[in-house]
Amino acid sequence: MKVIELPLGNFGWPRCCCGCGRSDFDYRPYTENVVIWTVLSVTAYRPISLLVPTCRRCAHKHLYWYAGAGVMGALTIALLAAIEKNFPIYGGLLMGLLVAPAFVMFILGTMAKPLKVLGYNESDGTIKVKFRNDQVATELLKNPGSRPSSHKIVRRSYLIALGAVVLIFVGVVISALYFK
Ligand SMILES: [Zn+2]
Image 1: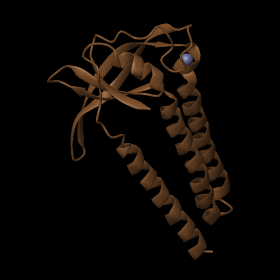
Image 2: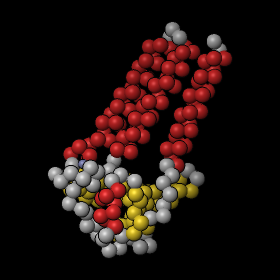
Image 3: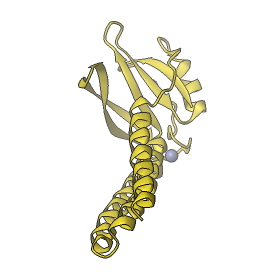
Image 4: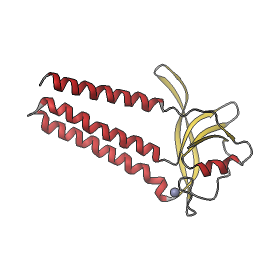
């Protein structure tokens, strides 16, 4: 995965799907809310819209993971409701066990996207984009105004969410063992 900075509106995409490199692609609209600044719990977003060359498969792959995560989440709630009456303690444990895969599926879905817009620089009109396909990123770097980014890939929001899930899971396990 490569992070590069590109001048907005002057992309010069390679003529292939920017996810898998296949030659049958369409230019599909892709919009992402990019964080402009964050102060404590207040975050300002700016929607960045691009026309991205993707094949059908790469354009939709993440949706299957999201759907899976949704099903897993719904299953958790349904099972929890059914089990809670009889086994109040193990219901919580089961929820922890089921929530984890749903969360992992959500992350996998996000990772399956061919690109992610990480930021927008208002002063020089460039956006910072992470590409799953290194070859596409290398190709885009040949365009004037493009440059590799020194950006460090830190999935901070995911790390916080993952930490919360782990904490809840540990709490549930401990309480299940303690109240047995
Ligand atoms: Zn593709």
